[in-house]
Structure formats: C-alpha cells, structure tokens
Image (cartoon, rainbow, N blue to C red; front, side, top):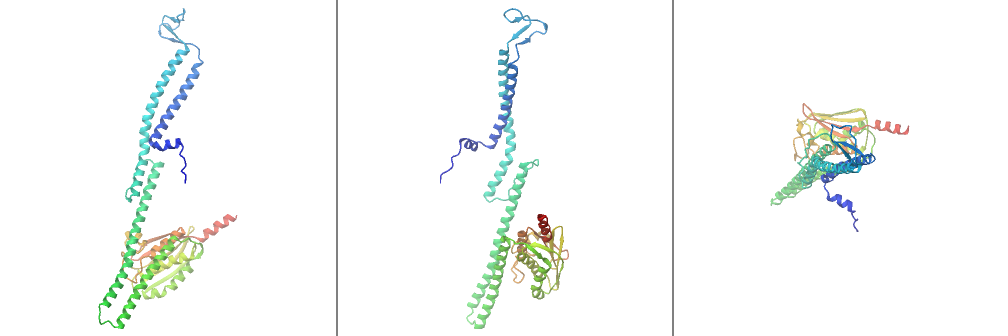
Length: 396
C-alpha cells in the first residue's frame, strides 16, 4: 500500500508546536496590521505637496528666499525627503512592535498551552495504567476548562469501571472456585474411606449434584447478566401490573419456603420497554426481596406513573443495609452484608441484572435503605403513554 505524500506546508505545521504557531500568529497579526497602517499613511502623505517645517518659533511668518531654500529660522524639506524619513521611522517602529508582539504572544501562548500540556500528561499516565491522576484545572469557565473537566470525568469513570471489572473477576473466580474445592474435598474424603459402601457413594453423588446445580445456576445468572447488558431492547407497551403479578405467581413457592409475605402489585401503569428484559428485572428484584429478608418478613410491589415515567417499587423488610454499600450492591456477586458464599441466599447478580436491563431501556435502578431494615428498589422506565402521544403528534 502506497503512503500518501505529505505536502510541504503540512509537514512544516507538524514540526511547529502549538505554542510556536500561536506566537507566530500574534506576531504576524501585529506585523500585518502595522504594514497596512504604514502603507495607508505613506500613500496618503505621498500626494501632499512640499512641507514647510518651522525650526524657530520666533519667525512664524517668515518665507523662504534664495536658491538655497533656507531662510533665517525656517527650513524647507521636500516631500520625498519627508517620506523617506517617515518610512524609515515607521519600519523601525514596526520592527519594535513585532518584537514586543512576539514576546507577549509567546507568554500568552504559554498560558494557553499549559492546560493542554497537563491534559496530555494525564492522558499519557492513563495509557500506562495510572487512572487515579486528575488534571484538576482551576480557571475561568471557558472551552479549555470544559475539556479538562470532561477529561477528569472520563478518568473517574474509567477508574470505576476497571475497579468494578477487577472485583467482578475476583468475585466470579472465588464464587466458582469454592464449590469446585468443595466437590474435590468430598471426593477425597470418600476415596480415603476404605469402608465406603454404595450408600456412601450415592450420598456423595447427591451432594455433588447439588453443588453442581448451584454452579449451573450461577453460570446461568452470569449469562443473564451478559444478555441484559448487551441486548438490544425491542420496546412495546407493557402492563407492569400484569407483568409483576405473573412474576409474583411464579415465586409464590419460593416466598412460602422463606416465610415471606408478598403484598401487591398495586397501582396501574404501562411502560414502554422490552417485556423479556422487564420481566427479568422485576423477577430479580422480587427474588432479591424474598431471599434477603427474614422469617416472617414482608415485601410489597407497587406501580405508579408521573411526568412521562413509570416507576415500579419493590419494598421489603430484612437486615439493615448501610448507605455506603448501595452502589456496590449493583455490582455482580455483591450482597447486602458483603460477598458471601452461603448457598441458597442468591448469587449476588440480581440487582446487577436489573441495573443492566434498565440501562438498555434508558432507565435506571434506584436503591434506598429502609430505616427499619430492608431495601426499597425502584425501576424508572419510560411511559408508553408519552410514546403514544409522540406518535400522534408526528401523524398530525
């Protein structure tokens, strides 16, 4: 493949730094303005006739006499001589102005370029894996300040994303490693027992099957999370009350085994979203309200709409949730009391799946701890009524 020939002017621009180009621009502006001013003055003065320059104020009315062109106290200067002196003085003044302009331009360009240099240093650190550095520019609210703030926000977002990814990798590895180690231990114990009978082997197989089923559920939940995070939503009007009722009916046995009473759903609202992703999000929230509750606890589901948005609220009793842990609860394998390996208490992926499903809809998942214990989770989704009004307006 042949490379495109770089024009000489473009190559010259690449060799010059931004500060140098700004300095040359300032100096060139001053030089060009001065040259135009000198030209205009010269052309104007060129058509003025002979000048009389009085050198002695004592003879204001004297007139020239004689061929020498001089009288007592009066000097006669021809226009050509005057213009020559004028052009020389103007050129010297222009050179001085250019020098001053270049110096001032160099200093001003330094103040302009320095923030960009700081941003470049932060970008180089980021490419080396250092994301905790910030530009931290303090200046007037101009374009450079906006660029620096946006760059700092990008670094903060990247730092959070990479930290969450590292935690996910560590937690997922730990979550899958523990049952595998448990299976290995059970096999080693049974193998080391010389008196093991067929009943012991059948018991071993049952325990391995139980642990393996838990592993399958964990992997399925991880696949659900990947699907919710990357799925393309196919929105349509969805009755949230009917959807929530279907979810509650399917989890009645689960709620009975945990001795949790579910109230609702109540209210009325129609969301604009993908029914599969919405059902997945609601199911995970309700299951989370059941599993992270206490015996004899309660959970309630309500639906409301306001200002073109639909909110599905899942409230439940349970242990107290620290306010500082709310954001981490949306991360995979996170639980209210920290990451736990207790089987049957969930895999810590429910809220992460619900949050990913909301992101696919342009909505959000809000979490709030209850003063008496437990959690309130709110799904904020676009309303189908607003979508219908927009379509009607387009037809009109």
